[in-house]
Length: 300
Length: 329
Image (cartoon, rainbow over all chains, first blue to last red; front, side, top):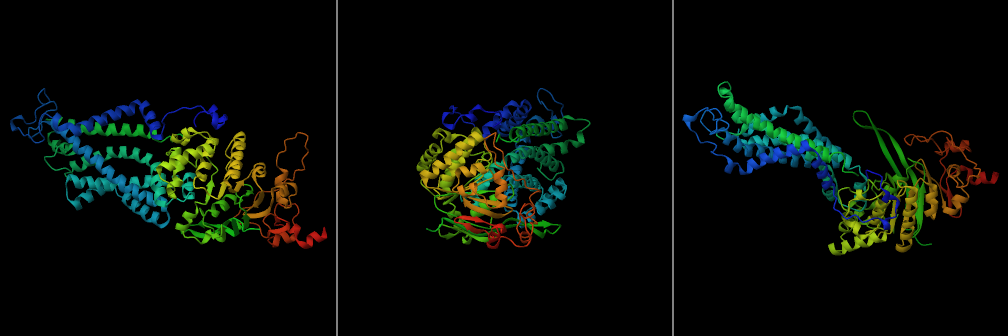
């Protein structure tokens, strides 16, 4: 308990009844709510999630409505973000691109969290040679610069958005694996794990009901932050032509296409760039806030 | 006399010491070295000793939370050390454990109800409804209230948490409870409450306790018989009265002389031991206590003394009580 509690001195029977639900998650939410910057981050994130879901109804034009007479128009009341070299409305494309970028971010991270956590938990809990093998594989993967590894994976699978997603998921597996492994190593030393074994619980049940929930907090934080980097990686792959293919309004791809018009029509590059930046910023702020809320130990 | 509930013979735990690049075993830490004792049904056996003497390791080996290097543990006619891991899990229904640190032994993410229901689910006792009722009943039995079931461990004080720990150990209706320093993390005033609770439960539920502690006063209060451990060995084992009235082993004497007496005019004859506890990775030859023993003889450096019954029910492992020595005295 954080503050000295006069209740401690009173025998259990006389203790005052304070009826309230207060789980560790609720505590975390309380901490999170106090953090203004993290709230700003979440607002940004939820704004983009909103765009991703309802973009089709918000965007004034489709992703590939080409009007060749309206090429490279500067931002105006008609085209808020201007138009690109095919006369497509950049405002609409940026909005519709949210679905692609967030989708890649979420699903690649979910993929790496699931696979990475499973491997990390097995490595951490069983230890010995299982741990050695899994950890060495992680080390090998981490020895490559991640974007290089992603390019290698995509070139094997072929350039497409889904393959870019898979590549990003794969390169992030060792990060989560190592994170959760180290957490499992600490949690497994806790006395409540010994006590679970003492009551005769099976290994698998201990893993699921004791070790996993207590190891998850750092993964949630790292996962949020990893969405940000996954979005950047997706954009980078898109920029290199290895991710989303035309005419998909992927932000990185839009940047790549705008490269030639940087001097004459900078808006073609600025708006997708700002969109990437804002999303990443939002996830980073939210992730930092989550870390502060979850990490300083749910008051033991 | 009937067969004891728990019989331990020649129990050993050596932890390998690994060194170097390839993890070559360079030695062993003899945490527990050839310990034998028995516990009768319904009694409390206290095990005392200073930190690192192997008393907790012994407790954990009894439940096979740690695998013994050697030796046998027989519980209720069943040799636990021979059971497969599956059978051992089932056997744990009969032997439960109360842990030292009430802050660490409860999962912070589970409500009290979930914590207490776990043993029932694991051993398939009752259905959800009857389990919930049992949880509430046991909360009342250990002096908490049934409305505490929905709370999380961090909302309780140390003493209350230890009551939860005790309730969890009781859920499966075990015969033997191994209490590993159950009160040493608590305030003195709370210690008494928890000890009295444990005694009350013992009377009402006919429990057998193995009570591991380093506090001699606490052990005296609760134990019928007491075993004293030093450096992985049991050096003396006797009924509580005998041990405290007439300690035989020099180590026990030194330990008891250090117990505070609540009398300011009491002039103690304190036996001060010299030196530190030797490392269990390289214990002294012969009697492990000879390096600090005020009565050490040549024989103590060479021959390991065995735990022998000097008087009825009073066992001691010391050469001072060898047959020929007693004749001389």
